[in-house]
Amino acid sequence: KSFQIKTKLTEFVSMSRSVDWCLQAANLGRNAMLNVRRCVPSDPEVNKKQAWFLDGNGQFRLVSHPARCIVWEGKQIMLTQCRDSMNGGTMHPLVYNELDKSISIVKTETYSLKGEKTDTKYLVGLDPFRAFSRISLYKESDKNPSMYSWTIEYDS
Image (cartoon, rainbow, N blue to C red; front, top):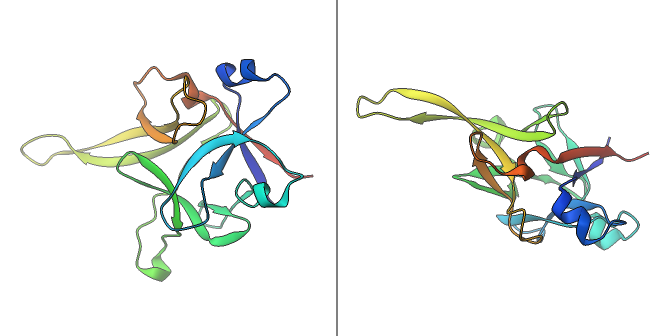
């Protein structure tokens, strides 16, 4: 079932009370950045960059281009070729938490000279004062309100 990923960030709502803001691919190419734009489900050209579905591995895929997934690299979130065991990639799917309205990943990182590893949780967010900024990953300890502003709205 397809859906849109929306932000309920108050700073955006105050810009235009009647507008919903959706996660959107900047384009349909490889490594396309993701940002938020006005939701326009009635416009097929815009909607093809805003409609998503979850596959059996928990990856967010673009409905119009199912071979494209939301992936992360470093602290960047982008749209690119889906990574799975079929094409030799490593899967680290994003996870949506309906309770706290977050989208997150857990990365295993080396944190000492001895090579000890720890899991660090990162959440998807954006610069709340730049409505059209690129979506990025933020540490759970960051004080960014956009990290807890996501909702998934399924098509009827």
